[in-house]
Amino acid sequence: MRQGLGCIAVTDHNSFSIYSEIKDNGRVLVIPGEEVSSAEGHILAYGIDREIPRGMSVRETIDAIHAAGGAAFAAHPYRWWSGLGEKNVRGHEFDGTEAGNGRSDAKGNRRARKLAAELGRPTSAGSDAHTPDHIGDAYVDMPDAPSWQDALLNIMDGKAKAFSTDRPAFDSVKYAWKSITEWIFRGFKKM
Image (tube, rainbow, N blue to C red; front, side):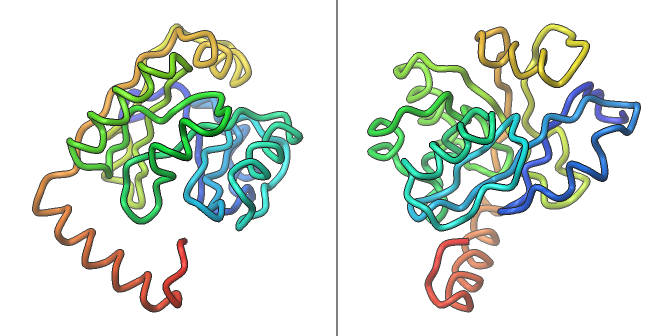
């Protein structure tokens, strides 16, 4: 792949359907995943075998991810409108924490790395790419894996190190404006 990625997890918002279209592409390993909108914020589901419904509590979402054979990671915990917040992350038994996100600002990524280290659980990183030019803005470096299951095992065993760029300040202003506008048009509901 052009960005040098050997394994990806496509975690569309509240949808698992893309996995069946890209899983056997022959170029990169694809971890089945989804970014689930719980009632309190986003949760990443890695290694699942089915779509996880949105809108459940954090505990119900984690349980549903585990029932689907997956690992539940707290996504971008300090993002003000879609992150779970520190209290929710500390208050639930997540399998891991997203310690770097290409669409989070430097402060949010710094705090997420610190929280992940304090919790001592596995870490991931996500580009959160909504356009192709942001693919690879965040990634994990890990040993080569022959299958997506082995790649996920590397993450769970702590053999993966998260890296991420930070969203520049000007982009944060544009992002805040876009997010607030979308939030208003959704009737003040989280995505």
